[in-house]
Each structure stands twice: as C-alpha cells, then as structure tokens.
Length: 505
Ligand SMILES: NC(=O)C1=CN([C@@H]2O[C@H](COP(=O)(O)OP(=O)(O)OC[C@H]3O[C@@H](n4cnc5c(N)ncnc54)[C@H](O)[C@@H]3O)[C@@H](O)[C@H]2O)[C@@H](O)CC1
Ligand SMILES: Nc1ncnc2c1ncn2[C@@H]1O[C@H](COP(=O)(O)OP(=O)(O)O)[C@@H](O)[C@H]1O
Ligand SMILES: [K+]
Image 1: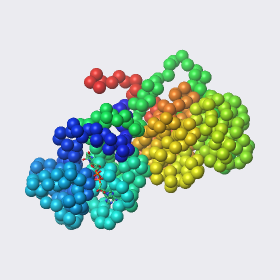
Image 2 (image 1 turned 45 degrees about the vertical axis):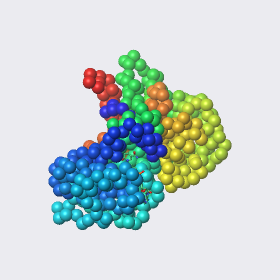
Image 3 (image 1 turned 90 degrees about the vertical axis):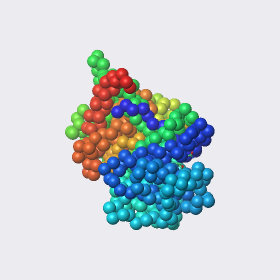
Image 4 (image 1 turned 30 degrees about the vertical axis):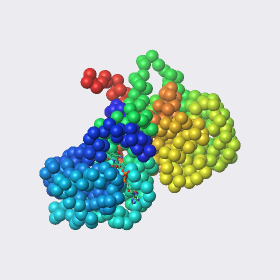
C-alpha cells in the first residue's frame, strides 16, 4: 500500500541513464534485458506448455528479443523467431545477439509463421521499443495486426510497439499486450492516453541499474506514500472549526447538481463547514439529500470560505464573470474547474489576474478545457499531455491536474506525476465535480496544496477502483457513489498509515 513512488523517465532520460550505466555493464544491458524477458516468458507460460513466438524488429528492441530467444532455447523451451529487418542494418549489440542466437542453433523466419494447431504459448513483441520515430507502416502494421489477432497472452518488451514512449499515443498501429516488461524505469507513455489500453499489466525490471543514482527522476507515478505523513487520525480535542471552511461556487440554472456534488464530496471528505454558493437564484435553499451543506448567496460564500472552489456548473454568464473578478484576487487558495477555466480562457484580463495571483491556485482541466486555456484544442493537448500540463503550470504559476486516462499533475517548478488509479467507468457527468470537492476538503483541513491535489486525484480513482471490484460499475458508476467510496478508502488509508511497518521493511 505504501510502496515508494516509482520514477518515470522520458526517452531522453532513459537514454542518458543507459549511457551512464553501459560502461560498467557486464553482462551488457541487452543481455540482462533478454534474460529477464526469458524469465518473464517462463512465468507467463507456467501452465501453458508450447511454443513461444518472438517477433523481432530492426533495432535494439529486436536485440532483446534475440537474447530472450537464446535463453529460452537454452532452457529447452520451443521458440520461434521472426525477424522483420535486415541483418546488416542492425545496431552492433543487436547484431551480436542475432549471431549468438544462430550460433546456439536458432533460426529466424522473415515472415510471421502460422500458429501451431494448439496456438502459441506466448506471443512476444520485440519489434520497437523507445526508438520508435514515426507512425508504423507496412509491413510492421500488418505484423502487428496479425499479432494482435492471436489469442493467449501477449508480452511487450520494454513498451508495446507503435506506442510513443513519451506521450502514450498509438502511432498508426500499436501492439496490444496483456503484459509489458519494461526496462530500467517506467516511461510516461505506458501510463497515460493510449498506454494503459496497450500495455496491460506493467512490470519494471531495473536490469541492476539504479536509475535515480544516475539521473534524478523526471516524474513519478503517484503513490499514497507521497502523502502518507498527512494521513493522521484526528486529535480528540477538536471541533468543526478545526477542519476548515470550504466554499464552492457554481450551480447556475440547469447545473445546480454540479455544485452540490462538489459540496457533498467536500463534506464527506471531512471539511468542517461547507458553504455552497448557487449562481441560480431559483436554486433550492437546502440540499434535502445533504442538509449539512449551507447553501448561501455566492457573495456570502466568497467572504466565508477559507478555501474556495469555483467552477462546477458556474456557467458563462456575465454574473459568473463578475464572480470570477471578485474571487481571483482573494488571498485564499482557489481551485478552478470547469466553467471557471472556460471563463479564463475567453477573457485575457481574467487570465492575467489568475496568473498573477499571490495565493495558491489549482487548475483541474479536462483536455478540452486545457486546450481552450492554451489557445489550442483537446487533440493537441492529448498529443502531449505532459507538455500541456507543464505549460499550464508555468503559464498560471499553478498546480495543474490534467484529467483523463492517466491524470497528469504538474507543478510550476517542472515536477510532474502520473496517476494510475481509476477506470473508464469514471467517464460520466459529475465525476470532475467530485474531484473538485475532494481537493477542496483536504485543503480546508490544512493539507499543503500539492499533497492535497495528488492525494485527491489518487483517492478519486482508488474509490472508483474499489467500487468496480465490488461490482459497482465500472459501467454505470455514478459520481455520487464515488463520494461515499472515497470516504471509506480515505479512512482506511488513515488506519493503514498508523500501522507500524514490519521491522524488515
Ligand atoms: N540502449 C541500451 O542500452 C538498451 C536498449 N534496450 C532496448 O533497446 C530499445 C531501444 O533500441 P533502439 O534505440 O535501437 O530502438 P528500437 O529498437 O525501438 O527501434 C529503432 C529502430 O527502428 C527504426 N524505426 C523507428 N521508427 C520506425 C518506424 N516507425 N518504422 C520503421 N522503422 C522505424 C529506427 O530507424 C531503428 O532502426 C529499448 O526499447 C530496449 O528494448 C535494452 O536492450 C536495454 C539496453
Ligand atoms: N478513462 C478514464 N480513466 C480514468 N479516469 C477517467 C477516465 N475518464 C474520466 N476519468 C476521470 O473522471 C473525471 C471526469 O472529470 P470531468 O471530465 O471534469 O467530468 P465532469 O465535467 O462531468 O465532472 C476526471 O477526474 C477524470 O480523470
Ligand atoms: K516492443
């Protein structure tokens, strides 16, 4: 549960680590990679005797495949290698690996063979790794189509071929793995955008390299250990004033529910008092499902809140714009979501006030909102989620959570994290409002902003994961259900955080 955060490196970072590790590496990194890949193949085929098919490409990823094949042959596992390249063009290490494979008695086929009657025990993709430079074309697209159509387990070596290791974008065509064995460290592309759909279960083997000793982590995979120190039971001698006054402003006509969901999430994650300012003058005076929420005029909420979330169902009317003009200069932490972001995107003056704020700001855009803020569009944001989140963090001097599959959190000082909890059942209306409420609640309870944001993002997905495990969703999951599950997961985390680590840890 509290395992350490895992470092993530882009391709240039991995290359730098490899360059620094290579001079001391005996056996070579490729030899180590092929050996651990063979071990993984044995593990995956424990109850599936039969032949392993390894498809090898024209670079060092193919080299890993040749070493893996040799190791499997030495372990007396039947293995077939198909090589989609030219021997004379292979890089030196990979060519040596191919020669060693031939010397060990192995053969290479130049086409993918038909599967045996009983099927392949395992299909291995060693076509392209982090050296992919452009969208795949024939014949590789055909190879990948054929491999993807085969039943049974499919193992990608380092990263599924066709997946951009930095962005997670499938370039033309990408291998769909059930398992990915990645070397040295995680790459962002495994964790965001198309990555999770293609990588399956990801395992990292460091190849006896300590990446962080050679290059500080560029990013990190989000883990509860990063905010464990704040997961503490409440002291007995406290009162509701000890846990902060959270304000939510939104809920214009037709969108009352968005503000109520954020308010309910803030309540159930422990904020002391929650004021919800409804922009809709005809909104109900009380949330009958959650009468603990104090529904007030937005102007009253501005004054009452110690931390304020603006946006859920805020609308784009002049009134909402005026509310933004009043809220942005306040000297309290602000969480800006949904229409608060859209208003900033279409009004340069609001953008300037926001970027110049003295107090801390958090922006939680989905890709379309991020696109509007950057003057681009959702597709451009998705083409480089890390870059977009980092760009927003710099431009607004704010913490950013760029939502979606593999939410990217970025700080203005260039640090970033990728969250791996959550599932596509969360793609439903109101889910973002719940996240806003969770962040607001933690800040109200005096969590430092950065910890509050990463904890809320992780918790939001973990709550949805727990529900899916219990049969609530993934499809049909409602954001209201996630609120209750987040409360349960959060309290369980506090109990677990208080449990001393075993002596051996
Ligand atoms: N460099 C090292 O020290 C290590 C590398 N390792 C492996 O090597 C991989 C990286 O190797 P490479 O840098 O050789 O890269 P790849 O093996 O990923 O592919 C590079 C080759 O593919 C070609 N290529 C790129 N995109 C293409 C496209 N769309 N269509 C057709 N051809 C294309 C390139 O021109 C080059 O020949 C890693 O992912 C990992 O599997 C491991 O052996 C560990 C050590
Ligand atoms: N495919 C997915 N995988 C993981 N999380 C997802 C996925 N789709 C949506 N989510 C999460 O659900 C939430 C949706 O937020 P948002 O798009 O703002 O919804 P809304 O505006 O309806 O409240 C975000 O936290 C997002 O990260
Ligand atoms: K691969």
